[in-house]
Length: 472
Image 1 (tube, rainbow, N blue to C red):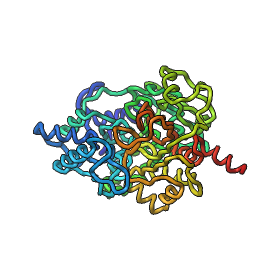
Image 2: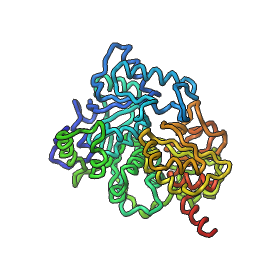
Image 3: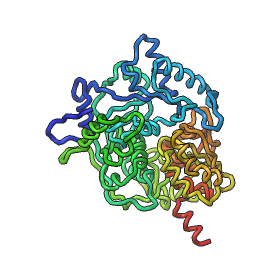
Image 4: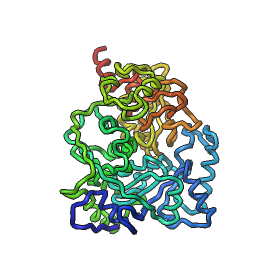
């Protein structure tokens, strides 16, 4: 794919948009390069399309996996804990195979969460448009792609035509300069930005993350940051691709090969915002201001550094209800509150680097009595790599359950959950009421903070864990 742009300064988003507009202007018909489907909504779109007598326009560019309602316990089968989950799986499998689509089944070593396996397989590439019926599709913008979530009806239209009609979103640049502290992770940066901008602060915008702190992030860190753009209401998020991205993608199964790779790589060099390009909104932050973060309320906006109380942040509608649901005090930090559960997983933080960071915290330590701790790798590839490195043994010896890939307890839809009223610390992206179970109180944090909290049996940062051990 090659790109040709007007001479006036353009943002990265505008370049990709201009390269994919089939017809129109602000309200345009846009070409879609890749489509991902999962069993929660994909089977609906595939079945409806088949029943209407229409066919899939480009089967080679459609990918399907099982991730949302699958069980993650060892020895799992199609029979799920979630009511009707088995039917979702079977319908999607039958429809995907009948249509001749690339399908990652439960026994496929490539199976996993879409936003983890898409980059692993080289499906997402710089400059492509990619859609999926999942709000965290924006994760894949970390590779310089324009990726966003859609509904089942839109998915059906995209399957039949490889196009979608869109109103062009506005643009926002979030720049983070300086250097993040050694104990600050990408998840902390994401929670910090959301706490400053708000859970609806980027509504209708494509966010471009930029600045020295963003450039210094690993690929996994960039994915975490783009993933959390959904929690600011963004249409999507994107980061200009660089040498880290190109190195990551080179040789992946569905990435270009040989001379096609060379041509693609040359084209990708232009995928960045031009000097002088203007954005509809801009924010700038200093990485030095970011500390390890933890949420105290029922949305990621309601987050603060471990040492600060909820009342120290920006007041917002719903704070009183959130405090009541979470059973926390406005004037006392949540750090120190006892927990009953700890979860590491999800499309936000279930990649190899996430597990490796958590394992460094857990090594030689044990999960506190009374804490149910669970780790769910994001893909079969992540799981195998972790097991080859002995990371699974670190988790097991510490007292964590080690699971099969899937979305798992990121969300509760009638399947497995934590207990009613139980306080949980989690590496997931959302914590609205009942998200991880009826009445469950979920605090969001980085994998490192989740691991430290699991060891101490209360909400805590790695810094606190190390300081306590240093004085013993």
